[in-house]
Image (cartoon, rainbow, N blue to C red):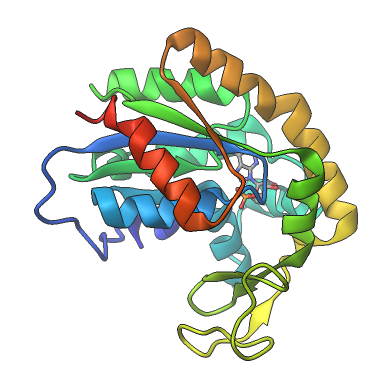
Length: 242
Ligand code: AMP
């Protein structure tokens, strides 16, 4: 809640009984399953799942005429599958700095997405006296990514994610968890997928090299079920969360 709304919004699920905060970045192409892994990791570690894409989608569905010019422009970029300009994204993250201090830590999903954003995040964390424990990079061949994205369906109420063939809901078009209607994200349509994959290859893929040089990158093969990918992630993270 605090992450989606910023301002004076209060955290709706402050973590309890967390032994130590886990501060992680999740990398990977759109559709690779970062969001699902973030939810599973969030349950396991008590860390808050912070997705910049969720902030933009929340702003979009909240269209009450109060959107700033920068936000309107950001939503246009998003609709076309393009990256939102770094300055807009960074301003949005800075407004939410309090979430980086979450007692359970954080799982950044979809941010950083460019080397400039990664440098700005390092600077922000340094100035807040925080450090990243690790960066998990989920890796999958391009054809599989495109197949996952084009079949993805999201619940408009609780945001649960399904797939028309790999993870279908019991009742077509209806969320298994809350009964909400499922929809296809505008940027999961074929014309946007192509643009998003280009943006990923050009801007986001170099981030893995950036964090590998820093010595905190954990590359995880993203084939298989969410549970199998999660098990690999937990094993890989044991080293850095000890
Ligand atoms: P996601 O849900 O992470 O795939 O994000 C959906 C869309 O939001 C992206 O295609 C971008 O248009 C925008 N977006 C989210 N996070 C960022 C970011 N860190 N930098 C630039 N654009 C972003």
